[in-house]
Amino acid sequence: MEVIIQSDASTISLYVARLIRDLVRRKPNATLGLATGSTPLLLYRELIRLHREEKLDFGSVTTFNLDEYLGLASDHPASYNHFMRENLFKHINVAPANIHIPDGQIEGAEVLDYCRRYEEEIRDAGGIDLQILGIGSDGHIGFNEPTSALTSRTRIKTLTERTLQDNAPFFARPDEIPHHVITMGVGTIMEARHIVLLAFGERKARAVAETIEGPISALFPSTILQMHPQATLLLDKAAASKLQRRDYYRWVFDHKPEWQQIS
Image (cartoon, rainbow, N blue to C red; front, side, top):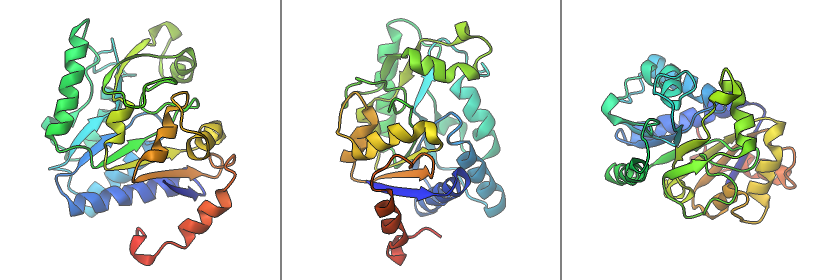
């Protein structure tokens, strides 16, 4: 696990955008795993800038999103389909056929078959090369709430009351918030070749400290990232404030070999 602490979200987002830029230039048909919410917004804005100003070509890229609310139409303002269109996809040249976001209008027993097909589509695309993650204040990744199986696959999940409260600002009324979602499983996420987790703000500090320095436990699903062969956690100062070894993490990053650095 690589821990990178930077001054602010803008610096981190620029760094991750360059990681993605270098991957796409090296492998034009790369498969990206994408996240929603406020955390990746600056990253997506920088990818749009790279496309417009540096002609970064997403024409052969395939994308898979982590999750979606069940019961929301794709054009609902709080749906993740709507979020991705407005904040990334309509501004870059990714092919619509290569965009995969869980369908929030699947109903009943069809959800189980749909989730299996989503897993198959990821495998058929050759697996995810780089997965972007945020982190919940309780350590959830995707919508894998505490006690989620660390080997879980794409499936339906029931949201905790804490997650419902955290997501309430995105809805006009509390009774609009769906209680169920489709999410990639922890095991699905762990199969990505490179996982990049972004965390900003003091509200994420405890979750970050548990993830990096705590014991591996399903009570904090993000702790499984300690077992990934290439997980990079990028934190602003506030999110890193509860880390016991933050000075060491800074020292390691500042002394990386030149060939490992991103320019």
